[in-house]
Image (tube, rainbow, N blue to C red; front, side, top):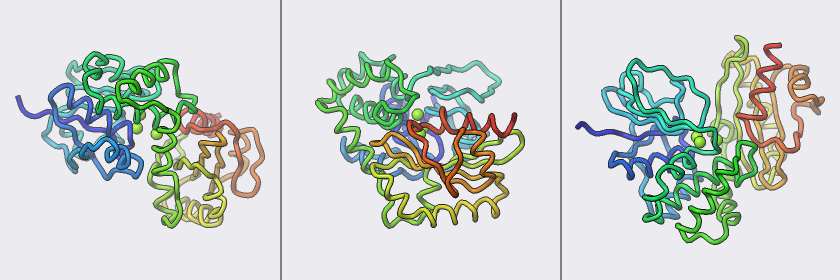
Length: 300
Ligand code: MG
Ligand code: MG
Ligand code: MG
């Protein structure tokens, strides 16, 4: 049998990388990544002394298991010329294939939750795998604060923590988030693009970036730069609107900066922006709380 690679989405995050490592380990496959690790994921791998998966720049001709994604736009380059043999995910499906394959998708807070749930017996014997999966659950659910969190995520995280020997889940979660949670000294374009997704809302191109911080003041201090860059991006790249979500994981809310029609933001979020931004208490998730109301505003 030719080698099978388990690979996550472009702009890899902790869930996609840790899920690839553990699933490859369980199945005897090889883990790969389609891009550079972010600081949070680098911290997690270093914490558990696990090497990063090998970089795969082009997947043409290879056999792939996709973890934590299924949308063609998020698949590694060359993925359209690869043989996809399996998908393990927790996102909405936008996937077509012309042969029957294994597809395992559940509506839970992370791909790691899906893997832990179905392979717990094997994970029990591997504290490192348990730790990687725990880190992925905590990362994707923003330490259970994201509305994407389910009771299953919490129960499985508790079980994983026991196996991994981590006694304080909250503190471990904050440590993980802190690793990526400072934007000090970073170019604002990098801050906005490290987690940035393009959407098509009723034929209009809308881009939404997000960063999670332990202290939102780091963004407030650079508000002028953020707004200037969003406007540059909007006019330079043909966007109808560009949004940047600065999420404070302690205060549990987000400051939404935007370049585009303020009336559209008011229509989407039911609140008048102050200048080029607005604070939305309780908003943590792009997938559940920012993209859907914006899409509705653009299409209704
Ligand atoms: Mg992901
Ligand atoms: Mg995920
Ligand atoms: Mg995410």
